[in-house]
Amino acid sequence: MLNEYLAKVRHRCIENKLDPKLIPSFTKISWNELNRIRDEYKERLAVIQTFMERFIYRNSGIPVLVTVTDADGNFIDYLGDKSLEETVVHQVGLQMGVQFKEELVGISSIRAAIDLEIPVQLIGTDHYHEFLHQSACYSVPLHVNEKLIGTISIMTFLNYAHPMILTSLGTVVDFIERELELLERNRYLDEMNEMILKQANTGYIVIDKDGKVVKVNPKAQAMIQSIKEEETLIQDLAPFNELYVLFSRGEAIRGNKVVLTNEEENLTCLVDYFPFPQGTLIQIHDISEYQKTECYIQNAEKLSIVGQLAAGVAHEIKNPLTTIKGFMQFIQEDQLDRRYLSVILKEIERINEITNEFLVLARPTERAKEWYDVKTLLQEMDVLLSSFTIQKNIEIVQDYMEIPRIYCDGNQLKQVFINIVMNSVEALEPNGNIHISVQKNSNNFILIRFVDNGCGFPKQILESVGKPFITTKENGNGLGIMICKRIVETIHSGTLNLYNNEQGGAVVEVLLPIGKD
Image (cartoon, rainbow, N blue to C red; front, side, top):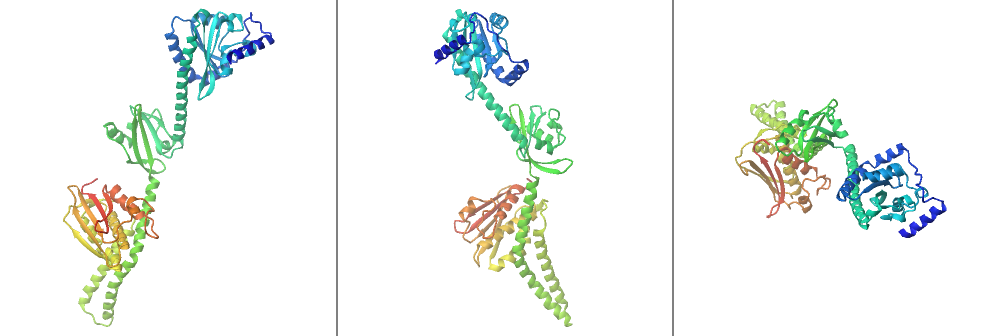
């Protein structure tokens, strides 16, 4: 293929009346164009220079001139032996910017390597022009991702010509291509990462080993308006300064909750620190809207429970009202007996107790923790629990051991307990029973266990505990158990377990820590 190509080029040189005895007049691209190409090839030229300098060093004693062209044959860089540089570059005129076009230069290893995309060597009289008959030229096409981007060539004196020069050059070019392809992939990944960071709804801050902020994506900039790249130290930026102290001590920062304050609003965020060799990536996830939605769902679930309780509560209130009405009729008939007043007051107190517990459920959630006795919380709910178990004649058996008080949100735990009992009541046949026990599980935890004698949990429920919209109820949404799980595990650092009793029935266990979390 090469011999046939060279023969055709030689024939065209004769047809074009190129004089082999004369040094051809090279055309050059403009300096602006040359600088544009060199700027485009800047990273590539740096890689080529690194590898070719090693090649020249390992072949010291052989005078070589290394030239680099782009895919159009424009001469854009060279390095190597000073004697060849003086002869070829200065005297002959092969300077940067020269164009290797067939109609001007005739037979050229560079042009052949570009046209054929194969390694080419031209020795002595293989060249058309006589001024090259005392030289040997070797050219190898340079590809990146299978696309021709130029050539790397070696020129030396004829008496130093050797076939191994082309082989060695080909090997070096292989290494250069691999390095350039890796560079292209890294550049692509960098561009993708940059685009992802700019478009991300999560804030990202990159700091160096000294804590200086070196990169901030737009989302983080919007969250923290005072932060500036290359100026701000994370140690001086609240509330990250406190986290940085913990991080510097070797503590893992994962999902730490912080509140960011700017001119427009307060943002609740989760912060993660991800160290890497040159610094640390700080991830800031805004959960403000999530918290609002969660609060809305939680309150909606409460109202749902309230709606289901309404019938039972109405029944409970109706009984004392009937009693009060009867005694009031006696009073109207002037049959006043002061004993009636104590009974009326007792019934009114019962109504007040029922309505107070009812309002607790409907009241918006306020996460205020205090020291509570779980037994007392359960006992305070007796009236409400009986109000909806009475409809199916469900018996609640209570077995409470002496336990220490726990630091908790009593209002939210009541919601959990009511939700669990209501689920049991709905699953039980009439005349069933629910056993509620409270005991100390270990030195640091108490266990509240709810056991019924129903059919137990379906398999899909046990496999998807805490996931929304997994339910066996016709009109259910599965949010109740999800909220219970979050209240127990996230807010109270406890554990919520669901399983089926070997003797039949469902078991729900709530494990809560005694001390402050």
